[in-house]
Length: 121
Image (tube, rainbow, N blue to C red):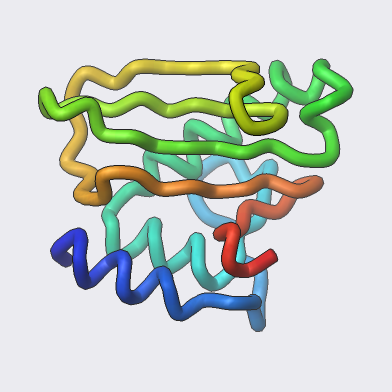
């Protein structure tokens, strides 16, 4: 799916009808919008990465209620995955050398144990 088609699909989500266990970790559940992103964007790795970081990140009190995740392409075939406590307050960052992720930037919020798109809040 092209980046334009994927973004158009993501823009249509404003709530969820069901929660989904995706990936291998099952520490978090995902909304319909995140499920769409993962399946159509072929990025199960992203949910696995977010879920795998929860034991470490949840030691930070400020990340226990809300986490703001961003995936941003670097223009060189890779991307940065960033978890923030609040805008500009980076708690964790990882550079990935290669990705076939198509969106220039994507945001996922984690509230409690639920991963959702900002538009689904």
